[in-house]
Structure formats: structure tokens, C-alpha cells
Image (cartoon, rainbow, N blue to C red; front, side, top):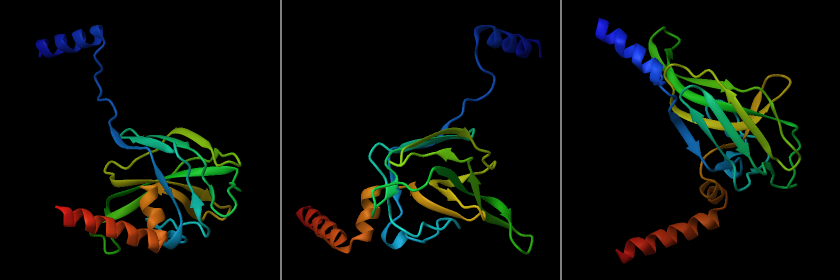
Length: 189
């Protein structure tokens, strides 16, 4: 027991932290705007916006295991106008976690955490550095950016994801061209 106490005192004196550092859960350098079949489509009960949104290059962020959420949003605008009509964005962190079903049996449930609103300019640029309360078990987290309306309903404009793939899904001719390229590569092997 004396050895453990001496070790703890020595660690404090030389500056070794006694608590674990937060680990990175997500570190992303791209987000995908709601478009094509994703317009109105819910991701974990949060519906996509009713119009197509585009996300600019340089958008990214991170989520740490202690709940620190950082978002650097660039050019999140309506596709048809090239402008952002919202003065405030909200961040959403969606986790799958353990809970109970309607019968009181253990089950997997969705937990959506909403940040405070953060200012966005007309060019769709915004920054957020905040802490969110993650559940003890947060599996398959997704980060979304969107709005919370006055009536409490939510909509997402952008989601963690690969923008090029989501845009391709909205434009069938691009998907077909990519499939042909993949077939050609496989044929060369």
C-alpha cells in the first residue's frame, strides 16, 4: 500500500495525469449536403431538409470521447441559391446505445444530442467548439449540422460522409460512369 501511495505522489510531482486523456472518436475532413434521394430522408429520426444543400471544401470537425465537438463549416448553402438563409446552425451527434424497448427488454436505441445554436453567415460559414453529454456507450456516431425550428422539429443540412459519393447518388449518370470505370479496373486485373 505504501508503494502505491509513493507512486501516486511521484506521478503528481512530475506531472503525470491521473485521468485518461480523451480519445478521438471521429475526425472528419468532409461532410455531405442533403441532396437527391436524401432530401427529406431521416438519419436516425432527424429528417433531411426539404431542399438540396451543398457543403464547401474545407468543412470538417472532430468528436472526442469526452464529448468535445468541434465543427468548422465552410460554404453550407442551398444549392439553388448559393446562399445560406439560416443565421443559426445546430450540431447533432447521433449515437446508438443501450436502452429498453416498449416491453422493458434490453434493446439498442438511438440517442440524438443537440448542441446550442451557433452563428452562421450568409456564405454558410460557421464554427463550433463545445462539449456534449455523450451516453456511456456511443456506437456508430454520426455528426449532422442543421436547424431546430421554433416548434422543436429538426432538419439536417449536412452529415458526416463523403460528398462525392452522395452527389453521385443523386445523379444516376455519374453513378453509371463510376460503375463502368470500376468494371474496367476489375477487368484489367
